[in-house]
Length: 394
Image (tube, rainbow, N blue to C red):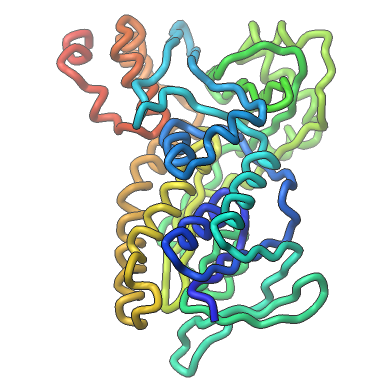
């Protein structure tokens, strides 16, 4: 009998399992892949996520992997250029953008070192329930052999197409249309900081990552997905050239280091966060367009919130556990809804004149620029930007 079974060993599930084990619980972590495999990702970990890695004692290991600190940000739109860095949180002013096969493996190893039992190449096919319909475990196959395991709590951290969410019949509480499609690849010998470029119907970003590579991402309106997919490589380069011509010049004459990856399945939703004997963390419970790169930091936030609210209530009876899960659901929605709404505004790829006027005022002042980049990182909300200085400039 485990205290918790976590399905999915990436950047939501591995920290959840690790923190539960450090709290003294017996935890089983299951994943369908082997540790160290790649996955679609913007890679960017904003400062709140970096602060979480520092609290967990794994930040230096991530940095030692060759992942450079993102100490300055530049953002260009229309005639506006903002450059600087945020004020940060808990002393962390730099973001990082590790490859997912690096970050996820470090987090899975940290979970195992904390006492978690990890089983890879594991497929969950069903949830076990008691006579009252409460989830009490899972069944599935591990390296082609059937198994069942029981636990007080089953946690789905298995992504946007979550098996746990489907089996638990976790309803959508918020759902909005897809807004963008995204394509990216990696380039060698392309010096870059964290660079963001926006235009009508377009968005391009450059992010340094492991092994001396620079990730260059492009975003298109969802309405163009079929057109872009038909000639993705050409559309990708045209988008970089149109939105970020200076970056395009750095790519000219070079070949990508890896194949082009892309997706049009940028879903926007909140699912019900928990029910009797089950909970969802990470993309399983909430997903938004990757254009603001909030997913990894949000997953860390959810892992910490769930474990903190479970303290003393996991294994203390169904009523106390269900109260903790209800508290987690409320806290998740309050914490993530502002970022969800701001992400959808950006993902519409239609900058309006009021926002441009605000940014023209912001770029004239270094302090306002830092506050703006804090907002981009999810440290503060838009209201923090409206200081007396900004109102005077406007």
